[in-house]
Amino acid sequence: MERLNDRNCNYLYINEEIRPLTSWEKFRQVCKRSIKGELFVGLWIVFREMVRKGNLATVKYPFEKLPISPRYRAIRKLLRLLESGNERCIGCGLCEKICVANCIRIDTSLGEDGRKKVSEYSINFGRCIYCGFCAEVCPELAIVHGGEYENASEQRAHFGLKEDMLTPIDIFKAGGQKEFPGYGSLSENASSLIKKTPLAYKEEKCTN
Image (cartoon, rainbow, N blue to C red; front, side, top):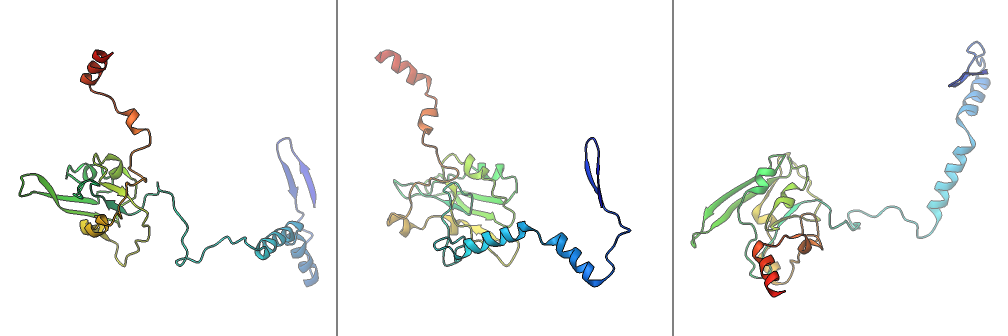
């Protein structure tokens, strides 16, 4: 075995004519090539971290669950107005139009008061890619990404209906719905980014 030096590469030439013949020579060659000092260093690190107290790297799922970020894009929720408890969704259909996976379907109808209401709202979670465009484009902050990520199903087409995603009225009355801080919600400086109307600027000039 000899080493050949080149201008750009440093090759290691193995003379194939010199091969181990006996079983002992083959065993020595395997040990020489596979057992290195770095192997024992790695085993020592694993053993040290394993016996160290209070150094658990795993949790007992599903009995223990790690907290997720509020910006995590999981199963969607439909929220209600905090003032009245009515549905925030106005049936504009922007989420259905912008959906790149074509998995959102909305059916609207006129209510007794003559206003448009959402009668059916469904999402095919089997096709959803969780891009977040539906929550980002919603003008009423009605559809948001919640933190529920356990949505395993026995079939490919797994649908979420309006009744499943909308906050139940009893939970809402008990104060179970809070303003969502996750994906699709307003940022902290959202008020400063809103442009005023020309009349507002005119009123400021008059007062000054």
